[in-house]
Image (cartoon, rainbow, N blue to C red; front, top):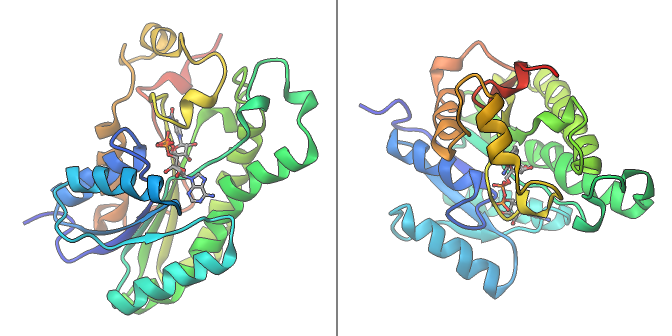
Length: 261
Ligand SMILES: NC(=O)c1ccc[n+]([C@@H]2O[C@H](COP(=O)([O-])OP(=O)(O)OC[C@H]3O[C@@H](n4cnc5c(N)ncnc54)[C@H](O)[C@@H]3O)[C@@H](O)[C@H]2O)c1
């Protein structure tokens, strides 16, 4: 018996097999869950995501194009999901974007309005828009679990993280307001604040070359986080083991967030 037997949901954010979303899907599938996926539109993006989904061993995957900047595409993805599956028990939001030009130490003050608003749009507003798409499906399923990926830079200044830190603070707060409203439908909303993992998104942040070494030195567990650490927490959040947990930000970072100085 798997913890997630009989549970079905949507994973948004697999770019390749290093993506946090890939590790989350891996763990959910290992525990008996069934996953549907989206990819960024475009042939190359689709090919890349499809290859990563193939590596998960999913036969004939449900894979739908979604640029979360476009409300029409969000609606289309949830409508298509609803035509293929009658239930949604979990949804994983693992997407973020900011123009890398402004993710350099010392450049925060120069961030143009459009870059600032764009980062918050893709990295935070989309959680709200996707939760709206998931709401009826989850309510019909007797409740559900929504989770999104955050980072410590939401709370403390991490040089170079800049406007992404602002966007992650908005994302965490969005999660709390959603949790408060959607709880009546037995929908839980939680954030996982993941440690540094080398991915396409994290390599856009300036100054991360030495991040792994610094974390391994300072973290209570004396190591960097692995994708599977976050995957296990996602299984907990998708499962009934976390039935009383909502509106939380759970750190999965080998403890590095507790260290000061
Ligand atoms: N890697 C880290 O160190 C780290 C740490 C904490 C939190 N996170 C967060 O984890 C999440 C996943 O990032 P990752 O590190 O796995 O990198 P990644 O590059 O593998 O994933 C980012 C995903 O965002 C998607 N995306 C970007 N713009 C989009 C749009 N307009 N519409 C739909 N999808 C879009 C990309 O296609 C990609 O799949 C992000 O929210 C990121 O901020 C990452």
